[in-house]
Length: 167
Image 1 (cartoon, helix red, strand yellow):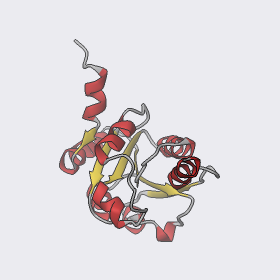
Image 2: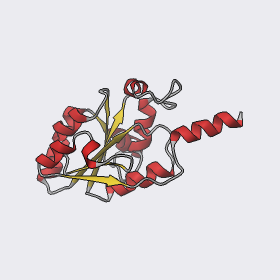
Image 3: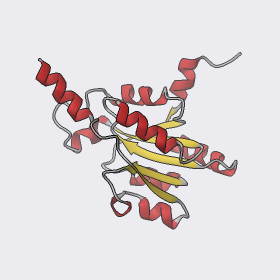
Image 4: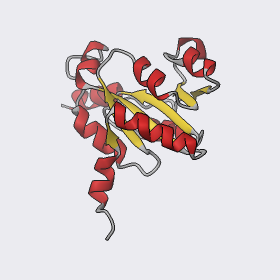
């Protein structure tokens, strides 16, 4: 009997210890593991394009998702995140090209990156290789760091502003 789709989606949301085992299994099997991270609060065209581009850099895509507490510390604004971490994780896990989602509470994903040691570390176009957390460590381990161009005109902040202005 096959696993229900809802359960398959939920199983993609995991813990760091479990994900570490999974990444080791994937890499031993020849998979190319890509890691990226972010808040992914209100999903929009820019997010989808970015995540699809990140997925195309390898065969497995892992998302490090900022916890609600870490989003608050990022000073995204008092109303952020709009969607709680469990809702954001579920939305990401539902995407076919995302293989795992792990929530992190630290200010940066450095611990995730150094624990998982992905083959590719991807970040958006507002970063450079020298400003990407974990880039040095991934490259020192033989991995790649890729900067993915943004789709102009899309941001969660702009969506929130548009909603507020319409009221």
